[in-house]
Length: 246
Image 1 (tube, rainbow, N blue to C red):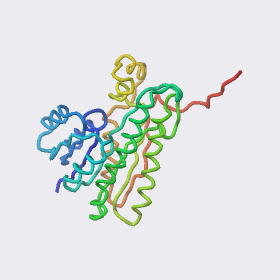
Image 2: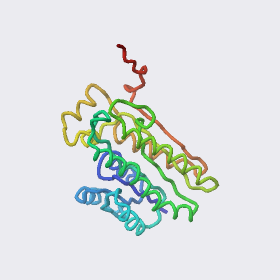
Image 3: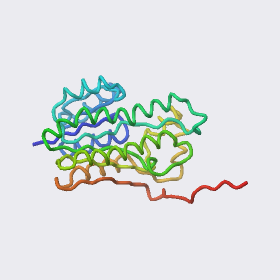
Image 4: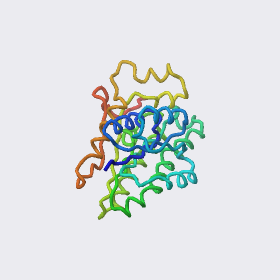
């Protein structure tokens, strides 16, 4: 019997790469995204592996519960929809950017989880995979609210595991480091040149690397739960704590 994965943020980046990889392996896909044209194009490309497309902004709680409740039971929920906006210091940001990140990365993820988790618990089967970021563990200038939202995703994932103790429903948290996709273009609001500078002279992770990680995680034996994975490109690591000297 074909397994089903529901992917949020399926129209670009990690979600798009996951859709293609899972389709190649014969999974049934429910693709969720905000951009109708991209969803339609992806459905046409992947054919009958796509059982449904859902045009949805995960920030809209009422729409999430209405539209996801209509979907058949899923084996895997991939909470991938998320974004970063800006790199300004906290005192200089556009507060609406903070709202958007909180509403998408935190509220949207919790809405989707709450909408689909009951049927997993009832079946005593399923897997919630939450895409986080190394920014949730390792701060950097300008990361402020983005890093905070991803720290929430990590802790929320751990607490879900605690709630699900005794059931067969699994929860995993995946935290990529520097990865080249549309992420930086979104962060810099379409400034392609500025986005390209982020990756200049590096060999970053690719969306396909994250897709392979997700696929490996969900295909462990049923008695195995991968709690968390953090991955970075070889060229990225940690540095000494910053010290300001007078």
